[in-house]
Image 1 (cartoon, rainbow, N blue to C red):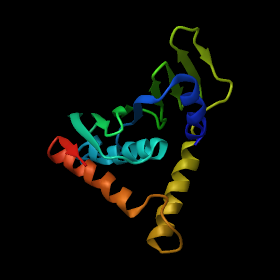
Image 2 (image 1 turned 90 degrees about the vertical axis):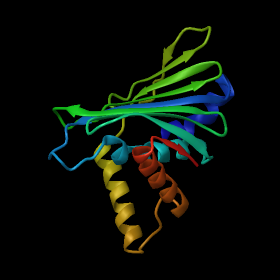
Image 3 (image 1 turned 90 degrees about the horizontal axis):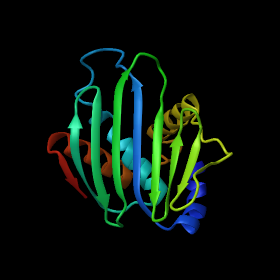
Image 4 (image 1 turned 60 degrees about the vertical axis):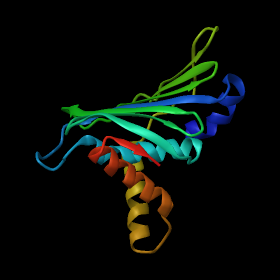
Length: 184
């Protein structure tokens, strides 16, 4: 939410967004044999985040790697924003370090959502850190998403995702897993 709120200021100062990167590390699977690959478990969340931050537009994506503990996908949206998603499920502890980079025409913002640290790298100027912390509260995030899902299934409220977004995100994960390339 903080990144979405800050984007207009970043764009005004550094130009339009040209790329987005998300890299995460999670704990090893609790049970073996449950997961075909990390991509099918996760890419829909990254696609959703990309659409939440920059609006939905058609995109193309390519699977670069996928197994039970690691995946990588790269692609480009029709608005010219390129993206790269990568993640691993190899940590021994239940911690969730995530790193987000937003590259703009004249600078870059890097976020460590585990520590909350945010650094700005203006091109041609000295880098600096933001005072505001961007640390993610993972139990709260899970609770919100889970409550929203249950409420929507029980028809007590609306999903934060549209039906079209749910379909697109799910389709992207399936096609990338099965075919290796998605266009939609």
